[in-house]
Length: 117
Image (cartoon, rainbow, N blue to C red; front, side, top):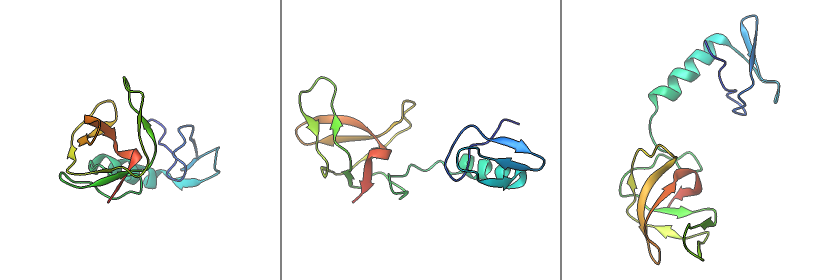
């Protein structure tokens, strides 16, 4: 079994000590049984969530929470820009929202930079 990520701080450098897993970054300890449950829970939950953990669905409206630079453009998408009627997709590169933004056109966004409106 590979070492699980820390459920508290998501650090990758965890190690086993007896029947416990330990995170050296935040000193969090949890049982190996709990680590298996957390791994199974993450695998079964394939929903796309915004920056605050809210589940997103097709047709939702979102608000950009970070200024986003656009490749090939001298301007950026400003904080607070509202994007309507999003479509969720399985983007291998992390861009899991497809949408149209006024003044920019069709674009793909990462769900970690938006919040549900």
